[in-house]
Image 1 (spheres, rainbow, N blue to C red):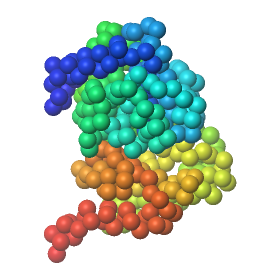
Image 2 (image 1 turned 45 degrees about the vertical axis):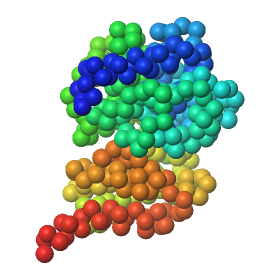
Image 3 (image 1 turned 180 degrees about the vertical axis):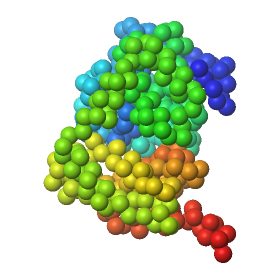
Image 4 (image 1 turned 30 degrees about the vertical axis):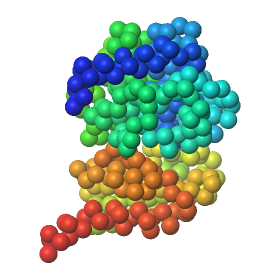
Length: 342
């Protein structure tokens, strides 16, 4: 299924190197980034099942990056109750597996577990600044980490179980925005077809992720929509949610990844920014691009990372302070347009 600048032979060799680490390990931890999304949760669960199926007897732990819980949206996934928080894991694993993550800074509290691990493996599709793993595959052309995990499962087992497929379809559907984002390439549809053939239910993913919002979440969404503001003649749209909003509605921060898509829907907008206050005096920012403008560099300048069209960051301060720093960076992307119009 692989179709990227990393050829099939190179991908198979990377998979074999990962498998060598798995074979030598007895205790394995699988962890994704802080504020896990559908790709992080689904890919991690599928990888854990794959390892347990292919290498019976391995002790595999799905680890969260911090003290947050699995978002309610993804608790329908098979195995979602197996996640543990880093404060509850005191072991020294033989292998630490980063999934949907190739920057150790985004491990948050779980980074301490990584640092005491004997070996590290990575499966990811985000651009990586520097290699810190012993074996792995980072393929930015993949629409989701779930695509690579699916291909790894076929490489190792030659098949996908229905539960693996369900987890991986959720990973793929959410990271492509229901196949609406620019990353929805031919490989994504090919993998999706294989997952459905293996027993995944698109209807179940749609029902739980997109058609089961709590009334409190819809009320919060209305507040966020009412605050949408545009800049640069409508090319940049942004909104925000405060800690007071979360307290008033009772909606956990972990359930709010989809709010950036409300901002993304503004007609004529090319860049969407959503800011939300989180405990600890921080603001998390989500960036989305609908054009070919690369927002990942700005996310990295803000201490985060991601893709050209989907990225995020965490800022120390309040929403006004975060906006005062990130908005000028976004407006610079249009400076050349303004000069050309003169």
